Image (cartoon, rainbow, N blue to C red; front, side, top):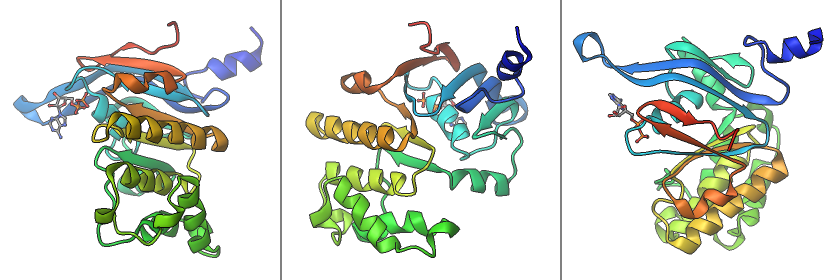
Length: 244
Ligand code: ADP
């Protein structure tokens, strides 16, 4: 094998186009006698632009794994590399920096109820220094137009339907062109058609932007949008979808 290939498969470096590289990751909740292991020796590599769906029974560790990848909690043991950064043992500052580079879409959309659709989307740009010198209003409006909400920019969340709120959440997650979007049950509170529309929209925008999506779901109706389906059970990754 040439040295070039050796370097790419080296555990300590990210392969070409790899945005998430997890190896021998373990995670525990609680301390002392209450300490409980919830993730066991997870190994997973995700490439730039991939749409990966993670499924598995409730309590199997999907949300915990997603929150580790998103810098919402610090990895304890093993290796978790996100966008070339080793996140094991990351401090608050490092986690915050990572979070700015990731878009999040949650089941309950998590919009600020006292802000309009446009203000919610704008807020995500205000976190980035590079956008402060740009016309963030126009950018936010443009993104809302892309998700089909050009007529609703000044609406508050309470006056939007479930599907529309989730579209605002998508606009908010993608407006800053993150390299990674993490979505936890984004269709759970939506009817069949709205759920389908929402994931197709995520897929379209992500493909346009070359963004990686990792989506946790129980919704069998949307599995076909994935490039790869990974399966968790009892804190273990039973299939990383590569050999399917
Ligand atoms: P899933 O998303 O697949 O439903 P979770 O990652 O939420 O699974 O949970 C995995 C396991 O970790 C479960 O046994 C759950 O009870 C436990 N768990 C999750 N969050 C915490 C926490 N903050 N403290 C203690 N245990 C937790």
